[in-house]
Structure formats: structure tokens, C-alpha cells
Length: 145
Image (cartoon, rainbow, N blue to C red):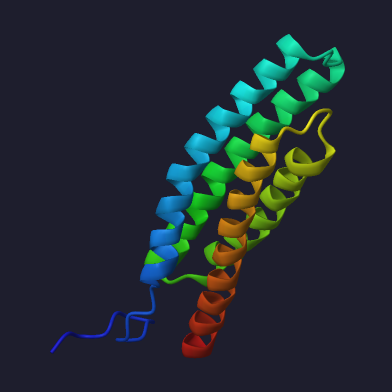
């Protein structure tokens, strides 16, 4: 019989669906980043894209990529180490990346149909991840308190 970890429950609380969703979201975000960057380049060549808006859109896309990497790190670490702090950080970062995704969905200078499709898929993944993260935080806090 396995000995319980010090300060932890003998029950494994990590979520396989959440871990899988984080992995799939990471793969999809690579596609999303490259396609959004390609569409920004396309729009800047074909349409009259204001220079200040172009710099803003590229900067926000790079910020979104950095926040996504941090979000995935916090989610994976929090899930595998069963610490609610990292999962809560994942939730906060998910909210921030959702706002950036909504920007690219509705508020950028030109929105193509491909933008709508790519952002809709990303928002669905973020929604599912948020629901799973809330469940995980509730499970971690109920067992450890």
C-alpha cells in the first residue's frame, strides 16, 4: 500500500481531461498564432491597414502568445502538483486571453471569416478549460481544507 504524501491526500486529484485539454489547446494555439499572424500580414498588404493599428494588432498577438505560454504552464503545474494557486492563476490568465481573443474576433480593424472561425474555436476551448479549472479548484480546496 502506498504511503500518503506529506500534507497531501492519498487520492490523486489531478484531472486527465484538463491535462488533455491543455495539451490540445497548446497545439491549437500554435496554429492560431501562425494563422492570425498570416492574416494580419495579408490584411496589411491587401487592405489599407493603418500603421498604428498594425503595430497594435501584432503587439497584442505577441502579448497573447506570452500569456498563453504562462497560462499553459500554470495549468499544467497546478494540475500535476495539485496546487490550487497555479490553477487559479490559470483561470485569471484564461480570462485575459479570452479578452484578447474577443479583440481579434470583433474589435480589430478588419475581421475576416477565417478570424471568426479561428477565434470561435479558441473561445470554445477556453470555455471548456475554464469550467474544468473551476471544478479542479473546487476539488483541491474541498480535499485540502
